[in-house]
View 1 (cartoon, protein in one colour):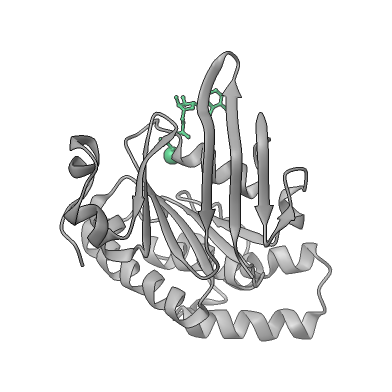
View 2 (cartoon, rainbow, N blue to C red; view 1 turned 60 degrees about the vertical axis):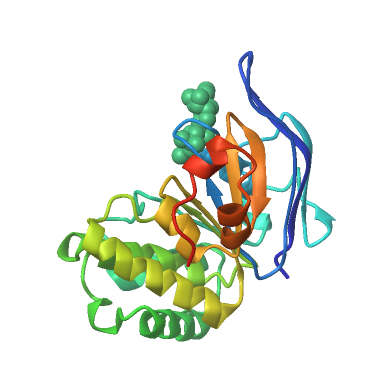
Length: 238
Ligand code: ADP
Ligand code: MG
């Protein structure tokens, strides 16, 4: 569970075509990174997959099922934002519980999932705190925890580490990679940071002005970048 297929997906804002017809298959369990300069359409593409934006054309298939018209809550995906989007007045526990509560999940099952996510993310001692009493890294973990408890078929990350300082980013990069190994769930990860792309990705999708310049493993792109634009977006391999 967790294959995402984009077939001739387009997105137009007003008269501007931000995403020209785009085809891409993200395989189940794969860690796929969208990389490209600011404004090239990375967030838009992720929001189209999540259902937070409607496509202007084309189809989105999730596990082979046409999901183009499904609302975000019915897609089985969980998005983690750069801004964390935590509720400041709620405890960590309540923040993590929120999507499950909305879904009307059994309280015992909610608690089980919260304990399990907190353990995986080293948040067990922080469950009764408010977001304001946490560090940036801890806040980002809470946001990830809130995604984990939904047991999504894929995680969608939009530049989740860009608000963290450099030292913390390295640690969180490793944590997310570990999480991917442990859960073996599809992750689609947007960044403009070449190092993140090269160290985390199974597959990198290099975007430029809404279209795909090249797709490949970090090593493939490093060894054989199609052009100077791709080469400019590739640092060193893992
Ligand atoms: P990235 O995440 O790669 O920086 P975005 O997906 O945010 O790029 O934006 C791609 C392009 O689409 C930009 O030119 C941006 O200005 C435009 N865009 C994004 N969202 C909207 C919107 N809601 N209305 C109009 N234009 C938008
Ligand atoms: Mg963006």
